[in-house]
Image (cartoon, rainbow, N blue to C red; front, side, top):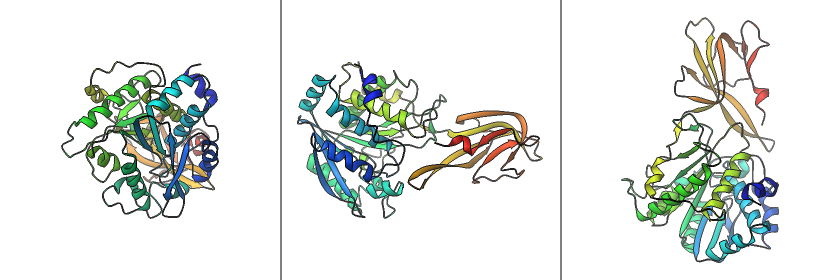
Length: 387
């Protein structure tokens, strides 16, 4: 059996969609507590438990944390796919045995359970935990900092999710992006950065076989308030993972698969050797750009205007009755050159109505965009974008 076949049948089916809170993880903690060492590190600002999962007994210590931003759940799903692989796979027993001998993998699957429950980036006090590395003003930040000091890892994995606005200059969306954070404002290529850069190159080379041309690299401007930058400054290699958007995968079920493959590659569980000549290949990975919208309608006329335009819609995510609702917002109007849509339609110079109106305003919630001469001809209908 290969990795792809295992994942298609073996992924953690108890976790799905974009909304994950601690209630979704607790039953899985009970299952994995028999196989892995799971301990309580503390509680969040609102009293939700924050746990550490420990796997293996090897000398090389890897420390990962996910859902530092509560609404970024894709990496958490991928972690539990990886946990299941390590505990349930009969076809990779020798590889998993070697993994456990070589590595000790420490994971905080949900650092910000309050934000996860509220589906917000910040914690219960409205603080972005990834800007709290210096102040350590929040309980969750202190827990992460103390865990880092206690574990003294050889490698850190900072696991995040990025919005669907990110793409590459080629026109492809950024399905997954990476960063080796800077450790100073000069963005010096330190020894720890070289190590994480080479690891990223290895993962990227492997993923190219699945999502060729859809892997991005984040800008490495230094910010000492970010934990990745702060830990890199401490001399520990850090890899930032960003789960991005691909195709119509708004629930990020495809992306989780490629993240799982990333973990498999990083830990050498795919039995493949990648020829990495230089850390400098890291800079060949194209840098992310904010050049994507969820939907673009091109080449249309609005009201009595004589100049053709394009309309861009971005979805706003909102938690409604424990489900994520994607609300279409009119975000931009214009030529939209060098911009791309995850879905695009050519209006072929039609005159259009937006919400049955001639006058439109950026920031409006969009229900429908239709042909002015025949409103039954719809270019956008929010009911066609239910996820």
